[in-house]
Image: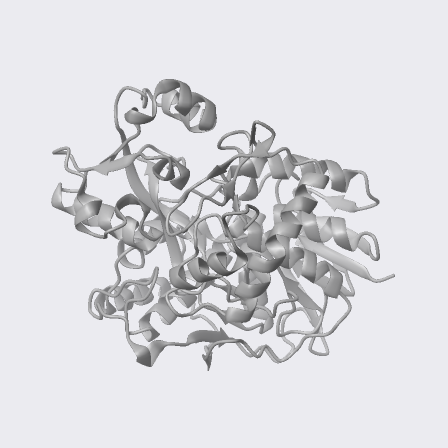
Length: 508
């Protein structure tokens, strides 16, 4: 029986732990409480071809189209073909998806050609999944370490053999492992406006980078078009627009119809940039999301969580449009893996938002994220014990060696880093802005030995990697918008893979 450390307790980590515990000794590590993750905050739902008027082929086509030419077709086929079965497994594990007359209720979201997004608790899908999986995992013989921060991977003889952690009492310890699965989520805290919780500081991706693992597609960060324009940027699900809500500028004009024929249901990157342009025309003031036509009863039943958040901030969205703004939401890039979750280092696996399977390409299709975590975490758990492979993807790649990120002598301020990234490496980018960002970041250094210091170290490293990759992609594609290269170019029809050679220096 192998010893497997799983870092992260969202859907990807919990599925991996649940599935792997039947064959292996599993140690589950999370830097916060067991239930705190991005999964908990997922509203819209999970997409799968579960209905007679839908098909796997249609879901594949929609996913490829949204990915703007950079999806790995083999990974997309796995996602869409295995997705329905994995959703049924979730139902068997106790996830109670919403139903109408006994049949699964389903919603419509942007860039989907069919109503295939199922949901739970109206707009509390992620929470329902998290609760059911925690219940299932707690029944098993899984060792759990809460409030335990992974500082780095432990590498010996070119193999990952454990993780170095900061324990709740502040001491540093090593947890040995035969295999490590990183399910540590994305890095929304790179930006001053994000729908992500405070735990999303990219710890797993940064640790894998320092250990020499290959990363991919890190320049592609998706900005959700609609977060409530209040402190904390609570998410306003795309499903609201799927049900018929429309976007208005301050003059009451439905501006998205001028941007794209699908209006509010255009791909996320298009809608986010459309909103940003409208905000620029009105001196930065938020646009308005008008859901009043849906009616008070429908909004309260279908979107109880959003209704409550609106009320908490003084908005009655059944009577008046609410102010919204884009916010950092999902990272398409991450640790490059094959379709079994295996990374480029022996003994290392990655699943969920920390991984880059190639499924999302340059722009994730709405509600494919929970499905990706579910499908590939299940596959990863079943593949544990097989070594790292040559990550031969189903689309062209350019692999580049990036030097260790430079450090300056000014202690990094997370707040200032987030503002810098939002201003220069956000929805719109340019060479001048990216070079300015790179120069500022190079002057900062993360100091200290606490978990908070470790998060700052990770954010600083990832910011530099994102900026460097964004400089190299001299085109606009999906979520990456270069105002100095506004066209999509066939010369860049590849995934940029980057790595840092470390030569056994990471806690060997």
